[in-house]
Length: 156
Image (tube, rainbow, N blue to C red):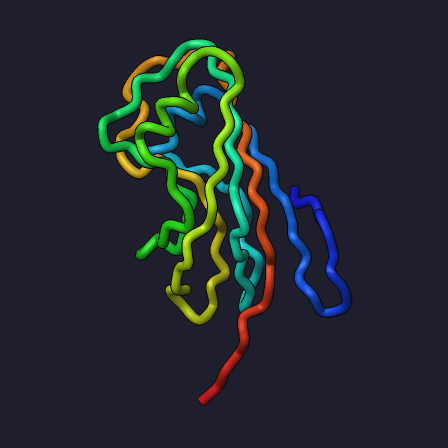
């Protein structure tokens, strides 16, 4: 469910926030089963990512693959353009047992793949990622800040 964070005036976009909590099974399955962070906004609309924050509470450290990336992306079924990404070294820090860890992903500029980009924003592991480890008590909290806005409709 989205939470409205602010409204800048008539006709101005609102910054929305979506929060998703992942359990151990969700974390370990990110390579094969991406998690929806923000649902599709509807025809002729798109969600513009502002930033994404990931917080973890890890009880048992995970073993992270050598070339793993944690990607936030538009799930368009073909190109799946990556909006933000965390490299292996930072994933290792996030998934090490101990105190609560925190990371902020800043968005990249990405061209929209289609005129109607009614697509969700998802989180996935870019490669095989977590190879072993973890504990039933492990949690990952993902906060996504975004703006949902209409596309300009142009006819020729």
